[in-house]
Length: 104
Image (cartoon, rainbow, N blue to C red; front, side):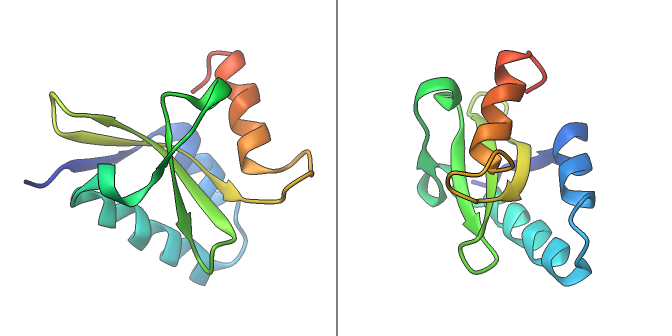
């Protein structure tokens, strides 16, 4: 069965902040692939992001954070960004802050 993929306004804002159009297109295509078996594609997160799954995109550098609503068959893309371990702009650091603020 397929799922409907919905990109939240915050994820769209994060996605549009990426300057390179080709990278944006690849991230979008990868996110739309979540319509088929989203639970098998990403890895489960922990701590602040326990309700999310993370999917690698664009040469393993970018991450798509999403939630699955099994009941309604919807994949909610919640955040998109680059993985920069140890950097304050790391997608996981930003997403954790947004979760604590109640934005995600």
